[in-house]
Length: 270
Image 1 (cartoon, rainbow, N blue to C red):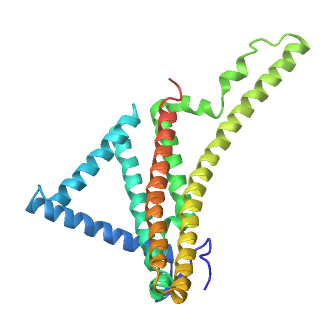
Image 2 (image 1 turned 90 degrees about the vertical axis):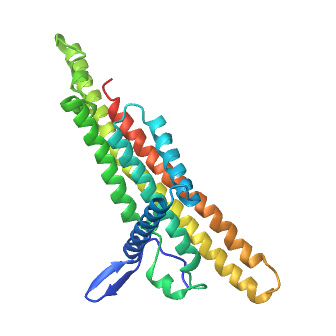
Image 3 (image 1 turned 45 degrees about the vertical axis):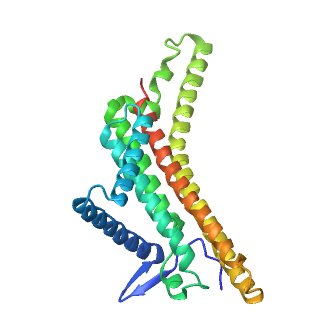
């Protein structure tokens, strides 16, 4: 047995290779579409159904929560960020189920094929790149070419308006260098955002994935030695519940950070 590695394995299907996380994402999408179909069917049949009412209540709560935090961000951008939250949350929770059952000690066959999507650093990196650049595009669309001043603060270069003598000449050089340095910091800051979003989601999901794997293996060993105790069942269950919360928290943090980036782009030149 091996502890889950930081990179997913690749499975050959026909002449093509698919990563475990890509296969999991297909499964996750199928389950989500199935969930939507069941919800729509039950809602048409009886809109007062307890399941339908609960889902509607959750949807309304999420919409109101992000609306209260969004400020002046347009409604369409809010909905996209809410979609991001739901997308990551759904994948995280499907990943928790996979952690619990697609294990070498539970269902070895599934363990070979499936792995939580958010434990793939490339998946998280692509999400981070798309949303950080989307926030930048939103800022550029909102403010036009003035938004570029954030990275090329040309106004700072003219703090010393007139160059008279060698002293003011050196002040002008320092003026330009400071402006360029500030612009460089802002530019590097965008890459830091991408790195932060990527690693935060990746390491948290991977860490709990490894922890649950270790707990299940330990529980299996305990079960062989002290089969009359219920602890081997309780330990994985406790970690499973905590991992559900962690999956929710990481989806929320990721989407809220994206919301903050949009708000920063919105307010850049106010």
